[in-house]
Image (cartoon, rainbow, N blue to C red):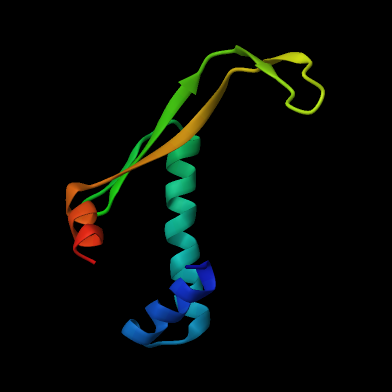
Length: 92
């Protein structure tokens, strides 16, 4: 599903204008992004939790050249689906 499809579904359910719906969807994504950027985890009840993990520096290898390189430390975002979402997806 794309962002445009999400906007379309919000428009179908809420009405209003498509511009307002697009702005609403964009604001939700922006709030999640800002929270993660500032180091906060984001938990959406019934959906799941976005968490930040710090990864340490580690050795890696370029698969094409086989040259060893050091992979720099970084933060990554992980998502864990709530049990409610997992049950609904598994029910089909």
